[in-house]
Length: 359
Ligand SMILES: C[S@@+](CC[C@H](N)C(=O)[O-])C[C@H]1O[C@@H](n2cnc3c(N)ncnc32)[C@H](O)[C@@H]1O
Ligand code: SF4
Ligand code: SF4
Image 1 (tube, rainbow, N blue to C red):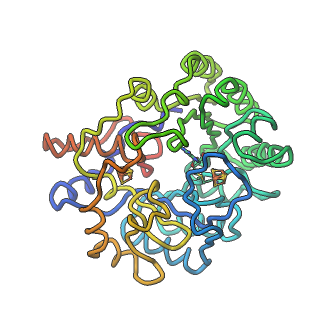
Image 2: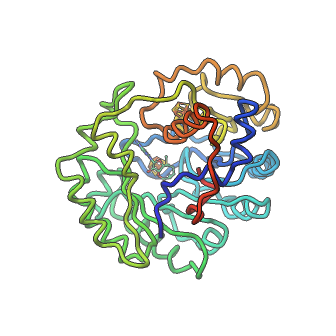
């Protein structure tokens, strides 16, 4: 398995051309939150779960998926918000996504009870479990829940791997890493390999209590033994199990390089977020932030919101100084700024990137 952190814009050259010519386009990748409910209490959850308990209705979910496809969506990630597998319409939504011609993906903590994973692995390009621990004690620390929930999470990963047939979803385990759990990174990677997942992904926290406006909490993320542990975890890789992390992002955190070399958030034209309150937000970090809300799907269609004056106003008035450093669209923004400056369009990558519909 190659790393998913490759440039994928060349695959969507048509959108880039449209953006260069008109200043805007329609998103390739969408995030959709079915619910803000969650049975876990992750201490640093960035799900933006306000309003608490928001739960999208089944008809609204179907309508939204069809509108995303009609607007030109190519990849739809079911995430949160809260926990997507707690919504009993998830499987139908995944099937509708692929039937509508899009690729689907799922980010989950594994859920609250037994579930059949065959629909998820059949319809998803990838399923990623937020593991973040290596035993019940460390899970309690990161996810705020007890032994039964840890057992549930491991059981869910095992069942998902078991349900997978050849050629179906890449199943992964993610490890949000900081000073509190870095010592267990290698143990977690080993456990993930034993559980039979395809990959183990080490990720930095974005939002932490001590982060500042233009600076992530470097001391908390870049612990003294981080690289040593990551390399040790990577040595566990096999022909069927990969261990990776976004190295460019980690190198920038280490160098305390949070400078943005772009003047506007260009990436918001290519990647969009719909939250469980049926509202469209400027990006995944803006969930629940009513200043950055672009419109309400119970009041207007997705197309009306996308091309409407409110979205234009929010995009135009965005002050990047208030944005999360190394945010969702940071790398995309850098790439798009270079395209603008040089006029050089991206070429189609060969070999093709992994998971091309997910920018
Ligand atoms: C908010 S969760 C919703 C989906 C699901 N409940 C889960 O935890 O996988 C979506 C993603 O955000 C990640 N996440 C949560 N808090 C974060 C933080 N402070 N910084 C970076 N990522 C975070 C989770 O690990 C997960 O990959
Ligand atoms: S499992 Fe996901 S949504 Fe739930 S608290 Fe943790 S990060 Fe937030
Ligand atoms: S946080 Fe990043 S993705 Fe979100 S609006 Fe700001 S620059 Fe764009």
